[in-house]
Amino acid sequence: MKLLVLFLLSGWTIAAAAQPKTDWEQAQEERDWKESEVKLPAWPRDESMVEFVVSGATSFRFFIDSASLSVGEDGVVRYTLLARSPAGVSNLSYEGIRCATGIFKIFAFGNDGRWSPQRSEWKPIGYQTAQRWHSVLRSHFFCPLRQPIQTAAEGLDALRQGFHPALRNLLR
View 1 (cartoon, rainbow, N blue to C red):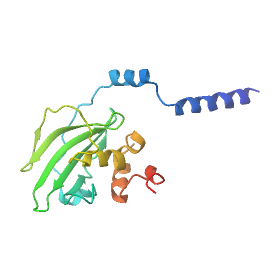
View 2 (spheres, helix red, strand yellow; view 1 turned 45 degrees about the horizontal axis):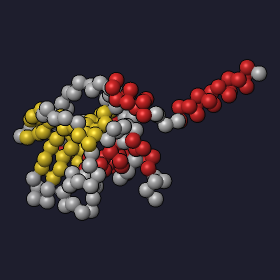
View 3 (cartoon, rainbow, N blue to C red; view 1 turned 90 degrees about the vertical axis):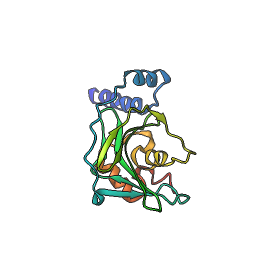
View 4 (spheres, rainbow, N blue to C red; view 1 turned 60 degrees about the vertical axis):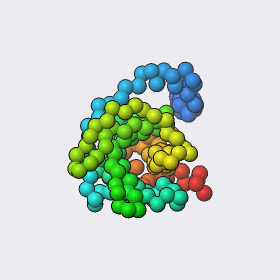
């Protein structure tokens, strides 16, 4: 009998955990959220860059520095992004994405081997904008089903495969 009660309670707990959060719960989590302190990464090396495709409509190439990819205790996926134009001009930034809320922030820009910290605010990720890479990073690689990756290795595997494995059935 005790085993049956324990089994039923564990099933109820699993079912309750799978329920979507109410608006109140989401608002409470947002109020309680605290951004972790950001430490700028080492300057990226060419051999640590992993390319990903944003769109066939752009001639720019995009890369993530594998050594900089991390997931903070605050749920923010942080990474160094390199965007290179067809003419070879490169833009380097250290950024973060909050998966649950769909916002991003630029922590620093890179130039001549040095980081220039930025005092930017969190901004919504636009899905139809010219800066589509934030949307692609969130939806295809770092935030499958709006949840942050668990480890940097998980995100790097997704980049190398072209999409996160959790999306395999959705992309067919």
